[in-house]
Length: 124
Image (cartoon, rainbow, N blue to C red; front, side, top):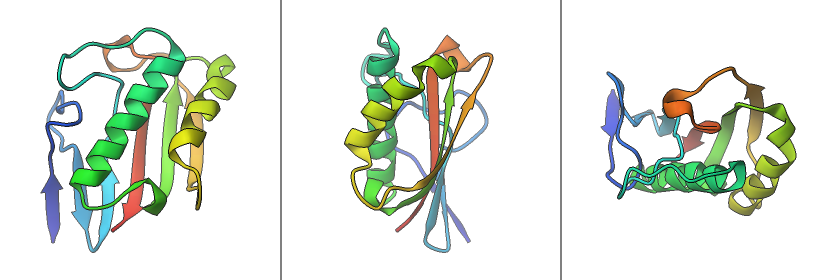
């Protein structure tokens, strides 16, 4: 049985999908972009966008009843692979121990023309 997860502390879905779903104690998030959920503002620059996107992801995980330390796998989509080191620097502030498995993929374009999007799978 799946449970739909939704919170106003992370950007709302901009299409026909859920922010996250829990199945059998595992939380699967949709991709989270760096939109401030309170204002709708997208910060400038990769560091600020990475911080906002990962912060939004952590809020979604919290609403799901889990946290960053329980993330099993993330997928990070970035617009420019030259930003990999900067993203890693921000990422390491959120995932400090028991780091999840991760893929990082350069993509041509992301929703709202942001520079980064992140999704996660976590245990409860």
